[in-house]
Image 1 (cartoon, rainbow, N blue to C red):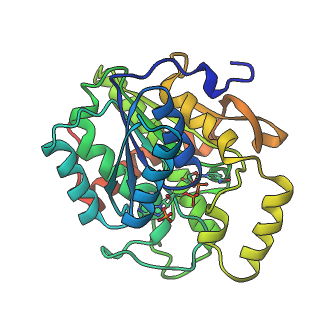
Image 2 (image 1 turned 90 degrees about the vertical axis):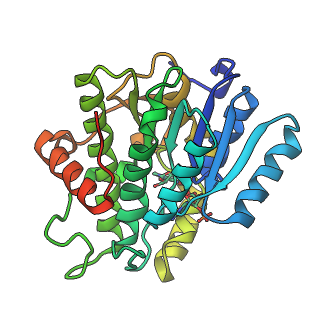
Length: 304
Ligand SMILES: NC(=O)c1ccc[n+]([C@@H]2O[C@H](COP(=O)([O-])OP(=O)(O)OC[C@H]3O[C@@H](n4cnc5c(N)ncnc54)[C@H](OP(=O)(O)O)[C@@H]3O)[C@@H](O)[C@H]2O)c1
């Protein structure tokens, strides 16, 4: 695993991947490498213009790439349901779902269903999408669900008593909550599939610190300016950051219930290596409570 790169990805012909947030940053790089290695890739993105542009950019360098855009707004559960229903009714056999899309540090906003936007996009939308597609994923070849978290999960907790930030909202604390939820979800999914002896791997990844649109699309004001400078000084490329989710998605050695992130500079840069979640994110009771709450809030219940 030392200095693992995309050159180590084996032929993925015959396998189908869904990558959320694939029009930009890490999701685009992930889709690009998967397609270059023969996979069929569904680029799930909320903007038709950006999604089709991403397909065109991929096709420009790989004319034979089996890539297609499908619209999903993860912040809107009606859109998530429509996306999943179309995948199922079109008979697309999904082998790997990469829960990559995300938004970071926006001002407080509520989604159409009344949830805080970072929790809704980064966690609830992916929880619902995975649940709705699980029956097809569980029959996939080397089936996996990859969930992209962040080093920021380490400062997170679930604000069970103020989930929408109505009483107290900080863009960073609510991003940390959503990325903490990603870890709780992926580890709980791993426990549940193992208990039910379902051959699906639930693998976690984080990109360290990668220069993408994340740092400019969510933050506002001074924070946005600071992130611009910080990106230039400290961030690695999106291509490097994407290696972690690619490793989690395709490498035979990537294990269910394990977490992969960069191996250098305090986890911010480098090649994929196994990393550890913060101890509180491994708490089984918190994970169960979040799972039950997520089922209640999304209306998506799992039959494992
Ligand atoms: N970059 C980093 O340093 C870093 C560090 C830790 C974790 N991460 C995680 O990595 C993942 C990918 O982020 P990135 O860095 O590649 O950022 P990015 O370039 O901004 O890409 C994020 C993607 O998510 C999509 N997205 C946002 N809200 C959405 C919604 N409601 N529905 C559907 N798609 C939505 C964006 O679409 P639009 O283009 O339409 O906005 C974009 O395609 C995120 O989960 C992020 O938390 C990134």
